[in-house]
Length: 183
Image (cartoon, rainbow, N blue to C red; front, side, top):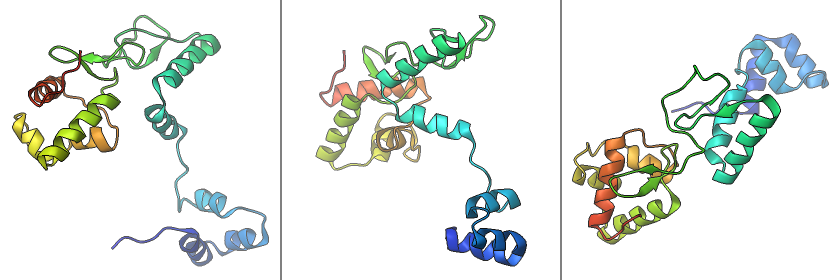
C-alpha cells in the first residue's frame, strides 16, 4: 500500500523532523512546499520535466511556433532529421525531427515525426480492436511482437512515441489488412 503524500503528510514530517521550519510554516513566514523542498523531504520539480511534458501535449502548430521562437530569440535552428534544436552543424542527434512530416511506414504516413501515432491512426486501431473485441496485446502478437510489449497501448492511450521502426511498418500492414490504409 502506498503512502499518500499530501499536505498533511508533509506537515507531520516537518513537525517531527524540523520543528523550527514547521513553526515558520504555521506563522506564514514560509510556505509548506518551500519548507519541504528546503529540507529535502520533497525534491524540487525540474523545469526540463515540465518542458518535456508540455512538448508532448503540444499540437504541431504549437511546436512549430515554439521552434520559430527559439530560432528568433536564441538563433537556434532545428536541423531536418533531428529532434533537438542545434546551434552547431557538428551537433546532429539521431532521432527524427518535429519539423518534418510524418515517419513513413511501408507505404504511407502513420506517425508524427517524433513517433507518436496520428489521431486518425489511433481511431482506426481503436475501431479494429473494438470490432474484434481484442486488446492491444493480441494485436501485438498478430504483428509478430511480444503480447506483453506495451508500445502500442501506450502509443494509443498515453500518446507516447513508438521507437521501433519495424513496429511502425508492421502496424501499417496490420491496419491495411483490416481495411485501413493511410496514404
